[in-house]
Image 1 (cartoon, one colour):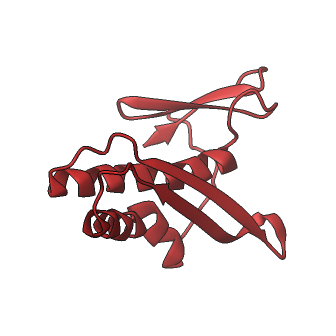
Image 2 (cartoon, rainbow, N blue to C red):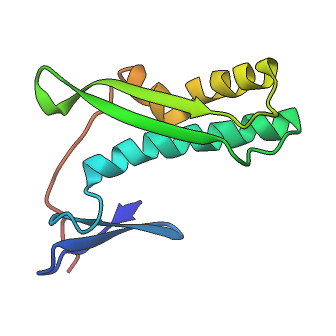
Length: 129
C-alpha cells in the first residue's frame, strides 16, 4: 500500500512499505509524471545490471539516457520513449546485444507497452468510529 498526507507545502512524500519517494508541485523535486519517466529509466538500469551479472561482467561505465516524446495530445500522451545505452570499450558485441535485449524487457515498460487493462477507482475513505 502507498500513502501520503498533504500539508500546505508544495512537497509531499509517498510511503510504500519500507521505502518512500518525495515529489513537489513547484519544480523543486520531480512531479509524479517525471517520476514515471524516471521509473522507466531506472528499470532500464535494473535490467542492464541483471544482464551484466548473468554475463559475469561489471556494469560499471554503462550510461543510459532516456527521453520521452509527447504524442499528438500533448505532454500527457506518451507517444514514444527512447532509451540509448552506451557501453565501455571492453564490452563485446555479444555482451552489448544481451544487455540491450535485457533492457528491452524492463517490467515497467512491459506494463505500459502491453496497454494494461487496469481498473482505477477513487473513493472517499470510510472512517471507523
